[in-house]
Amino acid sequence: MTPLLRLDHVAKRFPGEPPVLDDVSLTVAAGEIVVLLGPSGCGKSTALRLAAGLEAADAGRIERPAADLGLVFQDATLMPWANALDNVALPLRLEKTPKPQARARAAAALAGVGLAGSEAKRPRELSGGMRMRVAVARALVGDPALLLMDEPFAALDEITRFRLGDDLLRLRDLRRLGVLFVTHSIFEAVSLADRILVMSVAPGRIVAEIAVTPDAARGAAFRAGPVFAETAAEVSRALAAASGGDFLDAPPVSG
Image (cartoon, rainbow, N blue to C red; front, side, top):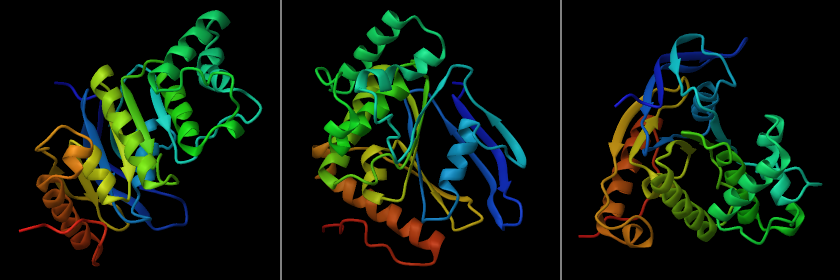
């Protein structure tokens, strides 16, 4: 199967600064969630911005889908004066989609993330988790094949993070989305990923790839099971080896 996204031997350096990325290669296929995991400053976000076309690589090759990409960042970046429906419809309006069609598609996108009935609410009337749902709906309203997410749930409490993560898994299954997801949380990575790519400290390189094979349905049942704990411990060891330190963001392995 041809990947939706491919980075081949990509490198990046900003003027006057040390290299950020060196020889990074990765792929994301339809229906697959690939997580980039690493310490702060390792180049995770830069890799995602290169994948999105927001930055140009200094070396290597990047192939991405011709269809629109969906982008979600840590800050929901909603227009505070606009309601949820108009925030979600913005990409369609910028593409000159007729207003009735844009509003209908935006309403369907909001319903898809569990916000039917919240169309008229402005960002200040929404919780942090609801604002992020609006941001996800806005990213999906153009029906992209590939979703790029840069620590989108980092500012939220743990319960909300897991709830939104479960929503992402449902949307991935429903729409066969390819997802590249950036995080520094081992828990979040193991909860979501089909594959976890562990990055070293800068210049960022992918130094380990760990497949996640759930022993139960994704969600709470998987997070409570032994494979989750064992995988999290494996990822923690890989991250420690890549960073020269110890990590405690992993549950103990029983037995």
